[in-house]
Length: 220
Image 1 (cartoon, rainbow, N blue to C red):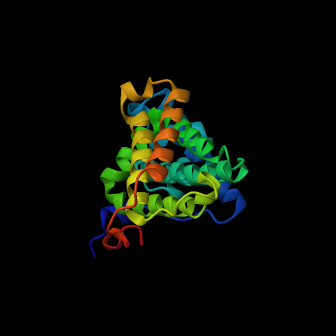
Image 2 (cartoon, helix red, strand yellow):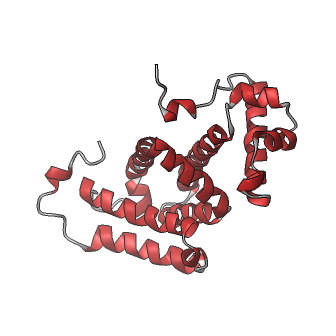
Image 3 (cartoon, rainbow, N blue to C red):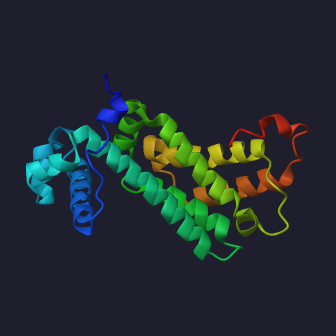
């Protein structure tokens, strides 16, 4: 039986016990430190095991190679993005929630952008684009359910095509901050202000599309 590239890059086993989760966490933290401080040339399983303080056999018990560690790092970044965005929105006052959301998103993409760019580009190139899209759409749907908190109770309902457009615009700017040098150098607070104004104007200031029904399944 021929294994797909995606299955080959999957971790060998999932850390179910607390001790195993600590070990995997140490491996991922060490990998991130190496990629940030030493670059991809130094990113080897032997170097990761050394920095993580585990044996190479222990590392191979969880990850077959360094590529599978990159995939796990990408998934960790995405999981952390979702958790921190939801926590930030839930903790914010309604009048501040949209700005807090965008500020958190942009800050996440600006921080350690070299690491994010490295592991996320490998993640997508390795065939995990559909998984990334599913996770992205899940985050968008979760945020859409909080629209009254983000936009105010008098905000108009967001139809699927408008949600699709505005979410891609916001996340597209965030990704540019990680991937494009000129975007990463822009001052954060004015950029956040600009995007907050854009979202509010787009969702409140324009008439609804005349026939949104044909786009109703775009995020289903």
